[in-house]
Structures are given as structure tokens and as C-alpha cells.
Image 1 (cartoon, one colour):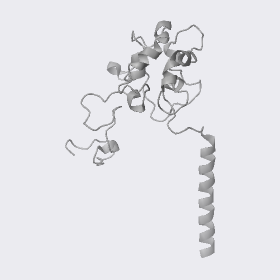
Image 2 (cartoon, rainbow, N blue to C red):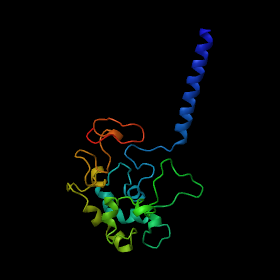
Image 3 (cartoon, rainbow, N blue to C red):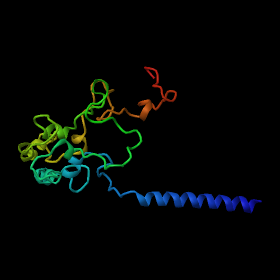
Length: 196
């Protein structure tokens, strides 16, 4: 009986290992620090070496890098070129966010504008015209808060929302995941009571 149990255990572990290997083989490889799935195409274009920061040479080359996103070669970037739609038939990822156009009650689908787009899109229309693209290097340089000539991950992140707890990372999520800094979690689907 022990031999049968061990054989079944080995078979199950082997199948689990092969399944894991097959799943990993189907995923595109991502260098550490590179753009994540669903990341900004603008930052992906600007960050030529995919290290998660924008170096001085990458800032200097911003106009050329941005024009790689110009699919219709008109010298400008429309909202569709800046945020391409998923291919027809592509499933929406689990937990897909609402559309960017503010569909829903009171514009609930709107996401904050990234610091990079805020700097590049001077007129705030959601697209980049030829003048904004031409001034991209100078606009990006305004984000260099520490004056080192490059844009670090911290300088590329959105500012912490108003009212966010001190110590919460920029971009809006608090420390410790869903339960906050101390890691306490409330019942599933509910927030922990205030003060916990």
C-alpha cells in the first residue's frame, strides 16, 4: 500500500511541476525593472534600456522615442496611439479597470494622469501634438526633482493622493496590503474598522 501511495504522490508532484513549467514557458520574459503588463506605452518607449528609469540619454532622445508610437506618421500622438486598445477578441484581464474615458457615475472610470503625461501634455487634451513632442526633453527634465539628470522610478510615480496615510507609498496603496500597515484584515469584502 505504501508503494502505491508513494507512486501516486510522485505522479501528482510531477504533473504539477510540468504544468508550472508549461505555464512559465508561455509567458513573455520580462527583465527586472522593465515595464509591467498594462504599463504606460509612453514610459515603455522612453525607457529604451528597460531598467525602470529614464536616463539622461533617454531624456535627450525623447522626441525620437515618442515618435515610435506615431502609427499614422502625422507627427502627433492621439489618445488612441498613446493608449492602444486591446486587439479584437482579446479577453479583458480579471479585475479589469473601467474605461479611461470616465464612463460610469461621476467619472468613476478616470484614472490620475501620470507625472510623465502631465509634463508632456501641456494643454491637457490627452494627446501630444508636434510642439509637445518637440519639447519632450525639456518637459521631462522638469520631473528631475533631485537634479541628477535622470528620472528615477520614484520621480516617475504619481504623487501620493491627498489624505493618504503618512508612509503610504506614492501611487495610492498603503503599506501591508489590504489591511494596512499592521497587516490586519477585516472579513472578506469588508474594510477593517477605523483605528485598526
